[in-house]
Every structure is written in structure tokens, then in C-alpha cells.
Length: 419
Image (cartoon, rainbow, N blue to C red; front, side, top):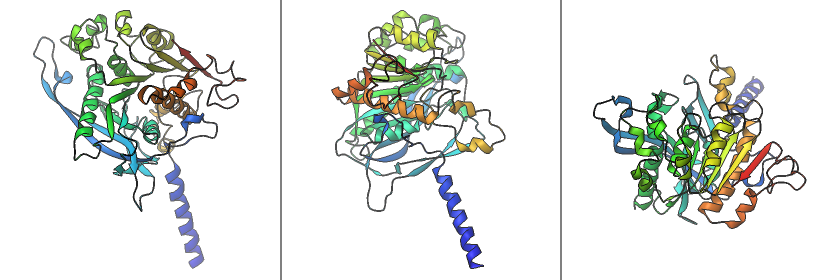
């Protein structure tokens, strides 16, 4: 009887251990490029709420009527370098709603909840992460932990009205995406200067990058300097009363409002070009360094007439375009498919986390590699990192010489452009 009980307990323990390995956001495959590896810092994580008053209430705005204003609140997950104390062991779990709101997933990572932030080597550059429509702050959590281990403070936003369980009209996202990113930048700068805040002396908001995916990239491109077109201001999907003109290239106040603390950006699957939200005038205003990321069969944002057209139009930026050949809209950014989908009755949202050709962990690792090189170059001034970016155009044709950081044929299927 005791032997049988021991076997049962052992089996239960094994099942728990197996469950904890599911949905890991910190996997680095053996064939991952060099800079995908985690850095030297332990990682802390905390959840904050940022509130900005006086924001136009797009959801309740009506044409020809005064636009109501409201207090807009954003939940933000913050990863940061940490000093662990005795008894604290790396590892935490995140409970998150998924693309199918009736499915809740448990993600597993390396961070320690509410750990003490490290000031050694700080203050650290700030990276703002902005999800798609819909999405949430955990969609790119693999980047959050990875970058924090390398000496960055990462603030990933839940955009109100644009999350899986709070998806409002598209106009809400069209207007609020770029201002949300700036609101979080302002808040993080305030936390870094607040003597009693855990981020005091830890975050350097004067050296900030924005990483956006899909609609997050739409907002990032705007904050990098590309004002929206006049056609977009009056389009059928735009919010009423020309609200989008606040962020338009033709508005002189837009250029004056650009934030000099934003030193670089990584737009992934940037939406908007096909819909006419940018033109030559607007894209010429993008002047800070940018790393665009795309799949060349993106059926949501488009490639030749979408992401690549944005890249080519940003003529005043030191810019790169990383292309996953034969990948779709999910190239690089989303975490892998949560295992909770495997036993679910409704798996409609599963494609949100998959690609028809590429393995998501492989794409995540490649994105981590190039994000590290790009941000170290432009936020930390590590000049040697440019050699990881200035590689032969076609990873397949250049495999004998290789792409720096990739082994053997590891760059096959990738293209890198630089202008």
C-alpha cells in the first residue's frame, strides 16, 4: 500500500513538473543565434498602472459634437535588472487571457515577482513594448525578460480598448496607440525620478526605444516621426472630428510634439500603409534609427505595398529591414502557441501564435538576437554591435561566410536590407 502511494505521489510530482515546463517564454534553442542568449542580470517583474488625464474619449465621441475627455488607465508589466536576496530563486508564472478570451494560459519565465531593482550599472535604457489589435502585455513577454537580463528596463503595455478581453471599435486604437506609448514613457521617466519608487535611479527614460507589433508598430512609426496622411484623417475608419489630425504630418504641432527621448524603434509587422495612413511626406519625417521586421507573405499589413513600402519611404532614417522569407504577419513577435489551446473546444485564436512555415521559438530567438544588437548599438552606444546588423543581404546565399552570430546555415530563410 505504501509503495503504491509513493508511486502515485511520484506521478503527481512528475505531472506538476511537466506542467511547469509548458509555455516557457525563456527558451533559447541550441541553434539560436549568439545574441539570443540571456544576459548576466537576474530579472525582476512588477505590474503597474499608468493613468493619463485629459485624453479624448474616442469611444464616446460623436461627429459635430464636443469631444468628451476622460482619464485613460493602462496596465503595464515592467521587467528590470534585479538583485535577488537569499531564498529568491529565478522563475515566475504569468496568468494571461489569450486570443480566445475563454482560454486562460499560464506562462513560465525567469523573472522574480517584486524583486529589488538593481542599480549596479544603471540607470538602464527604457524599452516600451506595444502589442497588436487585439493583444496584451504578455504577447511579447519573451522579449521583456530577455532584454531585462541584458540591462534594460522594459515596459509592456495593455492598451485599453485593444486587448483580448476589451476589444473596442478600431477608431479607439487608431487614435490612442501612439499617445499610449508616450504616456508610458512620461510615467516611466517620473518613476525614475521619484525617490521612493522602486525604479528610482534604475531607468533612463532619456534613452528610450519603442518596439511595436502590428498596431503597436503603427503607433511606433508615428512616434518615430512619421505623421499620418491627410487621407487617413478623413478615412471611414478614423475617429470623428478629425481627431487623427493631432498626429498627422500636415499638422505643424505634430513635429513639435515629437519626443527627443525616443532614440530608436523596432516596428514589427507595421500596419497602415495599405490603408493609406502614410504617404511620402509623412514617412520622410521618420528620422531616428529603425529596425523593421516583416514576413514577406504578410496578409494583414502587406509586404511589398505594406511594411517594405514603409521601410523604403523612411528615407531620412538609418534603417534596416529584417525579413523572414515565407512568413506571415506573426513573424518574430508573438510567444509560441500556449498549450492550453491543445485541449480546448474552441481553438479559433490559435493561429495568432503560429506561422505556416516558421517555428515560433526559432523566430523569437532570431528577433531577440537582432533586437539586442540594434538596441545595444543605438541606446548603449556599443559600436561593435553594428557588425551583427551589417550582414550580406541574403542569408542563404551568404551561408559560407555566414551572418555574424549565426552558425552554419543558420541564416537560411532570412534577408537583411540596410539603407
